[in-house]
Length: 113
Length: 111
Image 1: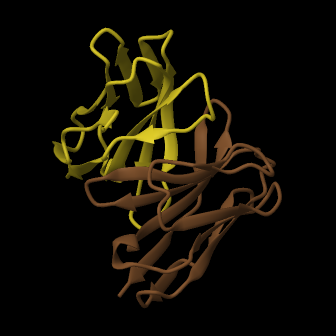
Image 2 (image 1 turned 90 degrees about the vertical axis):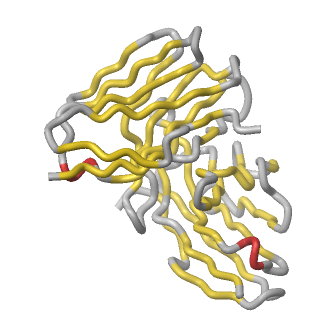
Image 3 (image 1 turned 90 degrees about the horizontal axis):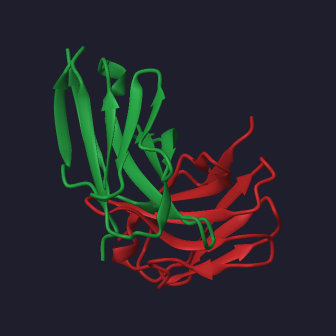
């Protein structure tokens, strides 16, 4: 049972345009959501997060939106740059319990010059 | 350098061989985790340790054992490797409000 889903395995965007990566979840107990970025041959690195009490969090070119009623979150990157080409993982955790993160399958983002 | 260190980076095993993946963190984090990454499957939790002296199963624990040697170190052992365990393995420790800090991974191939 996939509790966190990223339905788009890949996304290609022109440099300078907006990249939108989507993520859906099924567990209503999730209260904290994170996005990770992963380059080949490296471990994932933290990008941005959002608590369930908010609907938006912004950090420079990166903005995460949370729609709790739809159990959906998205990551917006504006403007997209070639260095943004990577695999992006959505993750979620519940307030209670052992602070385990549940990850989506990942979306490979390619920024074209 | 502060962070999570994994060894080895690469390993090839024959079916039935055993090995231990090592992980150490120097950030004084209480919680540590082992994940595996497979194409189309994302990152799946194998085992975790919420604190020194405790370990618990994650989503895919079969075929693995772990040891939380001390606060810094959390090792993953394959007692009898199988081709289905071919994967990239990541160790992580928890950084509050920022999720995990990951190591750079161990690429394991079982032939």
